[in-house]
Picture (tube, protein in one colour):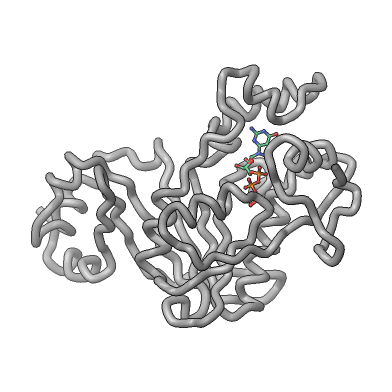
Amino acid sequence: MIKPEIVSILKNKIQTIDLNDSANILVGPITLPVNLNGETVTFKWYSWLHVTDEERQELAGEDMTEKLIGRLAGMKLADSQQSSVLVYGDFEHADNALIRMHSICHTGDIFGSKRCDCGYQLHQSMKMIVENGSGALFYLANHEGRGIGLFSKAMAYLLQEEGFDTVEANLELGFEDDSRSYTDAISVLQRLRSKPVTLITNNPKKLKALKAAGMNAVKRVPLWGDVSVFNEKYLRTKVLRSGHLEAQDGDSLPGTIAR
Ligand SMILES: Nc1nc2c(ncn2[C@@H]2O[C@H](COP(=O)(O)OP(=O)(O)OP(=O)(O)O)[C@@H](O)[C@H]2O)c(=O)[nH]1
């Protein structure tokens, strides 16, 4: 039996976002003070849970929060992946909002690996959002290795140590180069803001995904940086093989990544 006071604390912080054949259950906002380059910056944090159509129907009704809490302990959510979003400023109403759709990178974001530019992009985009005054960083937890998962990424890294590039390594292991979906994140974005956004990315596929979801007024700002001998080939492969838009004069870096 879930105590009524527990339900009443959580009820107003849980909402369902319906998709065609499934749903996302969004929880938040939660106050999240973050250490950003030595300064404390306060974000509003949300996480969401993707549920199937069947689960949505089972949870439906006035007592949805109670039913959800009742199932939570049995759902083994730590064994799967849930994504989240850090929101800054008056995200719903601000005229200019910067968005980052950041694919999880255990090695780059957590360990600070220099084999990719992910850790740099994560921290730099948080900084850009705060400097802009409004924005959101979506941290997409089922995107590891451009959708192949951490274990497979470890295997892909071993192939890369033998000379395969990042795209070839994915293909040799039986994956597509890029199998990421932005549908869930876009549904959350559309719930939190209906005005135009500017996307921080070098990847035109991300812009295309937002436009395909009906968000026509989307602009882009590039984000290149932290180029080193360890990731130069990886970055060049993104431009040459994965369709990333190369740096222009005036972008932070890298002059070395040329066609
Ligand atoms: N399969 C594979 N994935 C990698 C490798 N290095 C980084 N990643 C993953 O690539 C994802 C980031 O994708 P990128 O192609 O670097 O960049 P992007 O997100 O498409 O584009 P930007 O928005 O410009 O950053 C993260 O999920 C990383 O885990 C690699 O060598 N092989």
